[in-house]
Amino acid sequence: MPLARRALGLVGAILAAVALGGCALPAPPLPTLTPEPDATVESVPSIRPSTLDGITALSMARAGDAAIAIEPVYFDGVESFNNLVDSIALARVDQYLGDRAPAGFQVALPPDGLRLGDSAAAGDGLRVATNVVLASGSWLGVRMRAEKDGVAIAQWTIYGDGTTDAAYPGDALVDPAQGDALLAAAGGAPPESLGSLAIATDGAVLLASGDGEPARVPAEAARPLLSDAGRSVQDAASSGAAFVPVATPGAQHVPCSLVACVALTFDDGPSPETTPGLLDLLAKEQVAATFFVEGQHVQTDPGIVAREHRDGHAVENHTWSHPDLATLAGPDIEQQISSTDAAIVAAGVPEPTLARAPYGSAGGAVAASVRHPLIYWSVDAFDWQSLDPDVFVPRVLDRIAPGGIVLMHDIYPSTVAGQETIIATLRDRGYTFVTVPQLLSGYDLVDGQVYTCRGTVPSDAGPDCIGR
Ligand code: NI
Image 1: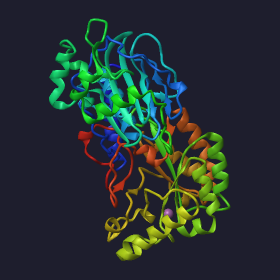
Image 2 (image 1 turned 180 degrees about the vertical axis):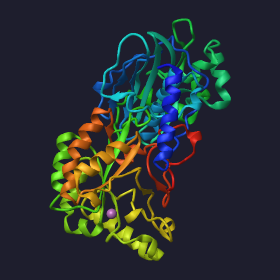
Image 3 (image 1 turned 135 degrees about the horizontal axis):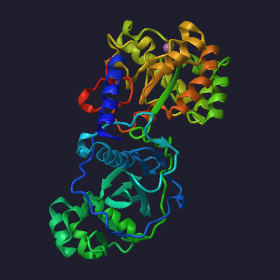
Image 4 (image 1 turned 90 degrees about the vertical axis):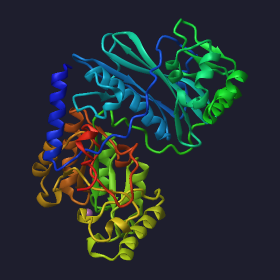
């Protein structure tokens, strides 16, 4: 895409965000990507991702005047690793499209951008492919490789530990004080080779040397030059142990920095009259949603929230009896939240990590007394007001933007009746449906703080997604 068109798209996105009253949570900070690794050397044999449980390989692509194909590999349940993968891919996309420095780019692509599930276009354009270079014990290592018009331009390695939920770029496997010593031991490998450092199954450290074969530092010589994480990777690589997936990985990672995500949310249930029909539809359409439930209804119909969880939806806290929390004293607010958490847990569902205050109320003692981040919305359907899909569905479709959170209610038959059109239309536009926890993966959410969407505009536009 020509720069001018892209710039215009950004301005449009900023204007849209302002018109909506603000919808721009800045993206998580990018990692330091310097030095940029050499792409010319394959240093370790790769493992086919499809042969491993506990990791997920995805494809996303876009065709057009600037073809882009991204093929990431995710470590199920290790979000620090997955967000590092996304950051690297995103920085590459930015550099390709806008020719800005990688650290300056924190923009999710618009709905006409990448589509999850589309397979990579061959030939010209940008391609970021990923292969697995280590899968042993609790450690997964991948190499990401960028090609422009079929020519390799850069590569990185990333290692993740399923036990500690930590992720390390290749150069973090080296003791910071010993980088030069390692490069010297590798026969004068260039500094940029540290970013794609790999550790072979015999514990040797492999660095791209720029002349075809990787430079190799034997295990014993390399060991004192590695960081603690590097030595753990070395131990795992040389142990020959089988890969151990994360026991309870949670929901699948969706790269909401790279594809257009939307979170449909449903409040005030569960209702035995309307919620099961909505769950049937969501299952048929394979759409994940988020339910902000009232404790009093959970207590009456625990089986419905158990099914919500079983079906892959997020079940979160919408207080016990739907009061305006801003009118209550702190201990009463705490009671509204904690009793609802307890009812949800009693239904066999994991304890909520998020809450939504009735009426979007946020004053008084709310911020100090709700022990979850507060999730509000970027699009209010007003489905309760019209009780008419012909009114609220176009309202939602007109206002949605990538990273959006839609507020609706699963206690009205008319709301359920409108979902098929909303889902089909947004899917046609290229949206991927995610839960709120998936949408906000990578952000450090703070208890009592209000969040209304995931950002889709540059971070220097301000943190408008926070607060309201
Ligand atoms: Ni409500």
